[in-house]
Amino acid sequence: MQLIRRANHPILLLDGAHNPQAMSKVALLMQEKEFKNRWKYFIFSAFSDKDISQMARTIGRLADRIYICELPGSRKTPLNTLAGILNPVREKVVVCPDGVAGALKRAWRETPVSGVIVGTGSLMLVGEILRQKRIFHG
Image (cartoon, rainbow, N blue to C red; front, side, top):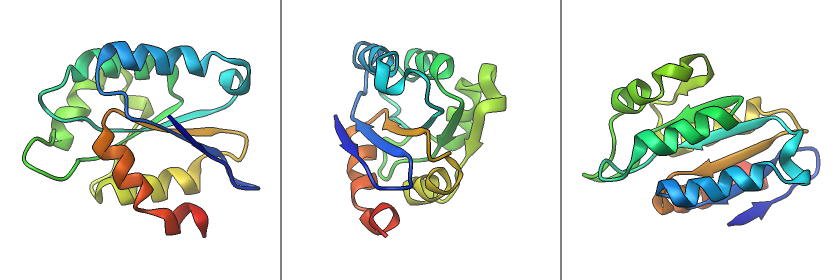
Protein backbone atom coordinates (compact mmCIF):
# COMPACT_ATOMS: atom_id res chain seq x y z
CA MET A 1 0.00 0.00 0.00
CA GLN A 2 1.19 3.47 -0.82
CA LEU A 3 -0.35 6.83 0.07
CA ILE A 4 0.39 9.93 -1.98
CA ARG A 5 -0.66 13.26 -0.51
CA ARG A 6 -0.58 16.61 -2.23
CA ALA A 7 -1.98 19.89 -0.91
CA ASN A 8 -5.39 20.82 -2.32
CA HIS A 9 -5.90 17.40 -3.92
CA PRO A 10 -7.51 14.15 -2.86
CA ILE A 11 -5.42 11.42 -1.25
CA LEU A 12 -4.19 8.81 -3.70
CA LEU A 13 -4.08 5.33 -2.16
CA LEU A 14 -2.50 2.57 -4.22
CA ASP A 15 -2.93 -1.07 -3.25
CA GLY A 16 -2.08 -3.96 -5.55
CA ALA A 17 -4.88 -6.12 -4.11
CA HIS A 18 -5.56 -8.68 -6.84
CA ASN A 19 -7.68 -11.29 -5.06
CA PRO A 20 -10.80 -11.24 -2.87
CA GLN A 21 -8.85 -11.68 0.40
CA ALA A 22 -6.60 -8.70 -0.31
CA MET A 23 -9.59 -6.64 -1.47
CA SER A 24 -11.27 -7.38 1.87
CA LYS A 25 -8.30 -5.71 3.54
CA VAL A 26 -8.78 -2.66 1.34
CA ALA A 27 -12.43 -2.63 2.47
CA LEU A 28 -11.36 -2.70 6.12
CA LEU A 29 -8.92 0.14 5.48
CA MET A 30 -11.72 2.24 3.96
CA GLN A 31 -13.62 1.89 7.25
CA GLU A 32 -10.77 3.38 9.29
CA LYS A 33 -11.10 6.90 10.66
CA GLU A 34 -8.94 8.56 8.00
CA PHE A 35 -11.05 7.26 5.11
CA LYS A 36 -14.46 6.46 6.58
CA ASN A 37 -16.17 9.78 5.79
CA ARG A 38 -14.38 10.55 2.53
CA TRP A 39 -15.71 10.24 -0.99
CA LYS A 40 -14.20 7.04 -2.42
CA TYR A 41 -13.35 7.05 -6.11
CA PHE A 42 -11.78 3.81 -7.33
CA ILE A 43 -9.62 3.14 -10.36
CA PHE A 44 -10.06 -0.56 -11.03
CA SER A 45 -8.82 -3.15 -13.43
CA ALA A 46 -7.62 -6.71 -13.12
CA PHE A 47 -6.25 -9.48 -15.25
CA SER A 48 -8.72 -11.95 -16.70
CA ASP A 49 -7.36 -14.88 -14.67
CA LYS A 50 -8.34 -13.23 -11.35
CA ASP A 51 -11.60 -13.43 -9.38
CA ILE A 52 -12.86 -10.14 -10.73
CA SER A 53 -16.47 -10.73 -9.77
CA GLN A 54 -15.78 -11.01 -6.06
CA MET A 55 -13.36 -8.06 -6.06
CA ALA A 56 -15.94 -6.00 -7.97
CA ARG A 57 -18.65 -6.82 -5.43
CA THR A 58 -16.41 -5.52 -2.65
CA ILE A 59 -15.54 -2.35 -4.55
CA GLY A 60 -19.17 -1.82 -5.54
CA ARG A 61 -20.19 -1.64 -1.88
CA LEU A 62 -17.42 0.85 -1.03
CA ALA A 63 -17.14 3.16 -4.00
CA ASP A 64 -18.90 6.38 -4.83
CA ARG A 65 -17.46 6.10 -8.34
CA ILE A 66 -15.48 3.40 -10.17
CA TYR A 67 -13.24 4.23 -13.12
CA ILE A 68 -12.56 1.07 -15.12
CA CYS A 69 -9.79 0.65 -17.67
CA GLU A 70 -7.89 -2.05 -19.50
CA LEU A 71 -4.42 -3.10 -18.44
CA PRO A 72 -1.73 -3.62 -21.04
CA GLY A 73 -0.91 -7.13 -22.19
CA SER A 74 -2.63 -10.30 -23.31
CA ARG A 75 -4.14 -11.10 -19.88
CA LYS A 76 -6.14 -7.87 -19.76
CA THR A 77 -9.85 -7.94 -19.08
CA PRO A 78 -11.74 -6.12 -21.85
CA LEU A 79 -13.67 -3.01 -20.81
CA ASN A 80 -17.01 -4.52 -21.83
CA THR A 81 -16.33 -7.51 -19.56
CA LEU A 82 -15.42 -5.26 -16.61
CA ALA A 83 -18.53 -3.15 -17.24
CA GLY A 84 -20.68 -6.27 -17.37
CA ILE A 85 -19.31 -7.56 -14.09
CA LEU A 86 -19.98 -4.17 -12.50
CA ASN A 87 -23.47 -3.90 -14.04
CA PRO A 88 -25.22 -4.15 -10.63
CA VAL A 89 -23.56 -0.81 -9.71
CA ARG A 90 -23.47 0.64 -13.24
CA GLU A 91 -24.53 4.10 -11.99
CA LYS A 92 -21.13 4.33 -10.28
CA VAL A 93 -19.07 3.10 -13.26
CA VAL A 94 -17.09 5.36 -15.59
CA VAL A 95 -15.62 3.53 -18.59
CA CYS A 96 -12.17 4.88 -19.49
CA PRO A 97 -11.10 3.71 -22.96
CA ASP A 98 -7.81 5.64 -22.71
CA GLY A 99 -6.32 3.07 -20.33
CA VAL A 100 -4.83 3.62 -16.91
CA ALA A 101 -3.52 7.11 -17.72
CA GLY A 102 -6.96 8.23 -18.88
CA ALA A 103 -8.65 6.78 -15.79
CA LEU A 104 -6.16 8.49 -13.50
CA LYS A 105 -6.52 11.86 -15.25
CA ARG A 106 -10.27 11.70 -15.00
CA ALA A 107 -10.30 10.54 -11.36
CA TRP A 108 -7.73 13.21 -10.41
CA ARG A 109 -9.89 15.89 -12.04
CA GLU A 110 -13.28 14.69 -10.69
CA THR A 111 -12.55 13.49 -7.15
CA PRO A 112 -13.37 16.07 -4.48
CA VAL A 113 -10.38 17.40 -2.52
CA SER A 114 -11.88 15.78 0.56
CA GLY A 115 -11.98 12.40 -1.20
CA VAL A 116 -9.65 9.50 -1.76
CA ILE A 117 -8.73 7.88 -5.05
CA VAL A 118 -8.07 4.16 -4.60
CA GLY A 119 -6.11 2.44 -7.36
CA THR A 120 -6.50 -1.31 -6.91
CA GLY A 121 -7.11 -4.68 -8.56
CA SER A 122 -3.64 -5.37 -9.90
CA LEU A 123 0.01 -4.73 -9.20
CA MET A 124 0.27 -3.79 -12.89
CA LEU A 125 -2.39 -1.11 -12.36
CA VAL A 126 -0.45 0.35 -9.43
CA GLY A 127 2.75 0.36 -11.50
CA GLU A 128 1.01 2.06 -14.41
CA ILE A 129 -0.43 4.73 -12.08
CA LEU A 130 3.00 5.38 -10.57
CA ARG A 131 4.38 5.88 -14.09
CA GLN A 132 1.97 8.79 -14.50
CA LYS A 133 3.70 10.94 -11.88
CA ARG A 134 3.32 14.07 -13.98
CA ILE A 135 -0.44 13.87 -13.47
CA PHE A 136 -0.38 13.96 -9.68
CA HIS A 137 2.94 15.72 -9.09
CA GLY A 138 2.05 18.53 -11.43
